[in-house]
Length: 107
Image (cartoon, rainbow, N blue to C red; front, side, top):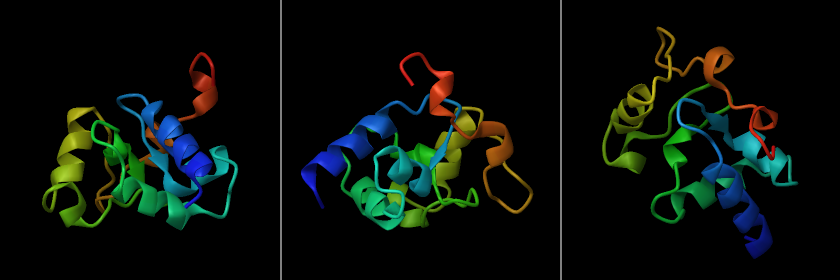
């Protein structure tokens, strides 16, 4: 992975506010490589401690495999603690909580 791309991915991820989520594809697009969603996923797996990686989801609002955050249900627990709404099928309700970077000062 290109170091500059990783830096952009981590910078974007750090800006996702509490109570909002993003997708791997959205972060790839914002980082300048719209077709690199899988690379963003790999970057999240290796992310530095303290980065809010739990706020990054699949494009349909599905959560990551359970072992990623310390066991099944942990990512959902973290997101629910931030007020993220979920649909009856277990996906996050992206219509209500998807982050729009332009909503924040500085993008």
